[in-house]
Image (cartoon, rainbow, N blue to C red; front, side, top):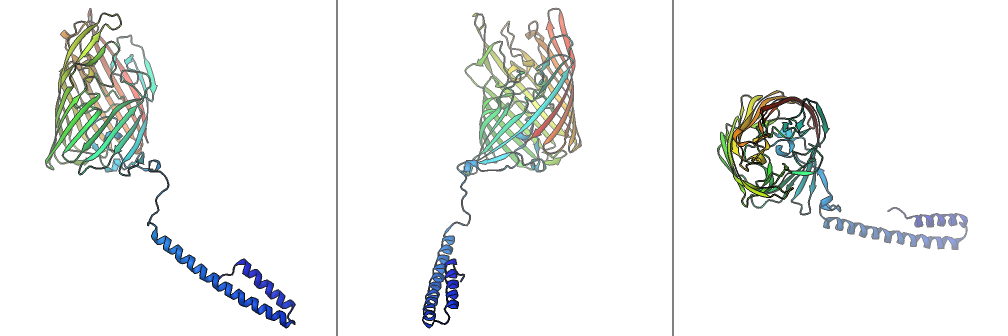
Length: 479
């Protein structure tokens, strides 16, 4: 047993005295007695050390295998699993990204208090530059061209940057609970300034056969999108569908691996949260709009270029029926309230010709659908109060030159019925576009786009055409 410093000192002192008084028998006797006492003390200390060791081992066995962290659960952060393609992509296309793409493992994961819930936070910084030979509305996210002289305009902004919050809660039986909120730095598609507004914000519960969701969501009608840099995505130029509050039900039918059917129904707010019209007051007419869609996926799901996963053919049919009210004359006190009928029918499709080549598109027809980015944003004639009928669509051919380099060529058009319009209204709006996307790595993406746009106005002396070129580039960094 190792000697304590005190005992070592006593022994050395005793030895020194023994050397000094070696010829004194009495002194030697006293030293022998001291040595016996020291040996007894050493034995007692060894026994005490043994008891202490046994107590320590007993305490170790009584503790859990892994001690609990002293950090509060809400402060524990770790690397998050990859999010679904809905968050990673700018648009709301139904084609998903496979596990190779999801391997980014972007964002952070926050464990909540109950230990069964997690909040995953991701986002992207999106810088966009644009030059147009004629002034568009809105710079940076063009919808149509304004009836102005042919003078160039440029814009640089980061308004399309986003923050995403995905919540997963504890399962209820075989039901999964979750929520999603996506925020952009632009309050409205028709606003030029910065802001902080939600694109979507909804909660959901789902299993293998059913899904129920409530909150701010994408429209059911014509949910596909073309591949463009601005987040207007050919809105008012053939691509209808925006964002609005709704209650949604979905049912998945999978009779075999060769095909799948999805039935979707929703009660929704007639007024979109992403379109602002300051010229009048729009509100619901006391009833929600009814939206529905039936989608068919034909062929087995397979891997495709660009780390995508999809069935070879997907076809959807959708519709919307409802209405809204408008209040005119708020500024001058000459109030007039008008009811507007709204309805639309649409079809969307995607066909993968090969793993690298394919095309997609949508077609629609309807009435009073300015809040759905149809009718070139015109729901009704502000002179007569009658709703405006419109039709159009878009089509896109895409080619994946490599997994990280793809080209998209397309055309979109939106045409309003001439007899429903008043002087100065937009009759026709169309866009021819080409977009090249280079995914430099899993987080950094470069995009280049060139558009030829035409907008025709109904003038007092005849139709007036305004056209121009729009050149855009974008840099997206996901984090």
